[in-house]
Length: 295
Figure 1 (cartoon, rainbow, N blue to C red):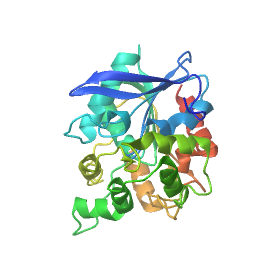
Figure 2 (cartoon, one colour):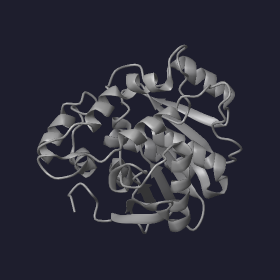
Figure 3 (cartoon, rainbow, N blue to C red):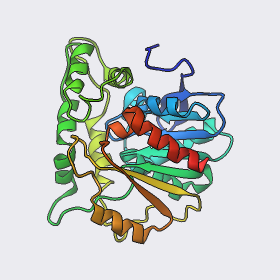
Figure 4 (cartoon, rainbow, N blue to C red):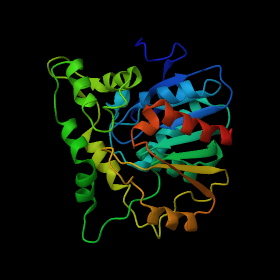
């Protein structure tokens, strides 16, 4: 086991349509069960730092269909499909409602899950995701995906001669180069499949494109939380995927959502970016604090 993975960690899997959904569990003897859902090109190891920040909580996190150890699960993909998979994980491993955390695209999956299976969730924490992105006039969803995820999609087509080469690729990433750690190295290593000199990311580009389309909706008609009765929080960061300001949600959009969804408490987190909100201890501490308010 890699040193960055706590000794309280163990792999898990649950039966879903087409095979098994894999993931991990931290702090199995903890109290409140938290289920965390990762972003569009990520994997469950993105939550290792959060698990350290929540030592008294049991944390379960899947590799979504088309990613990580679940990369061989067949399509179709899509936000509702992932919500069904995560609901299956919850019913397999939790004895009652859980606190649900969703980062980036995982926020969209978490929101879909509370709309469809509200009885499985006692509280919801969305992290820089979950609120639909409006499409600019005249732009097709696939064009929007290319604009926002173009570098990530390019990476999914690349091969790398060694694990060290993949680490170096990520160490140069503007969102991570000042925050590099053993936990990030473990997260990056876990993503790789294949053998040297043709290692590649486990993430399916087809899944990314299909899932990405579901994140662009008309904000004025989108039913984000449905009739979910529990407490819900959203954390948004001030910097984007490349550590650039502003973040994914401009102030104008947040004002719109505060008006439309008064039940959703929205907190803005300065200085951190879309990655470091989960992968840096200071970011994980902010998420952990939000989780504790719901548990």
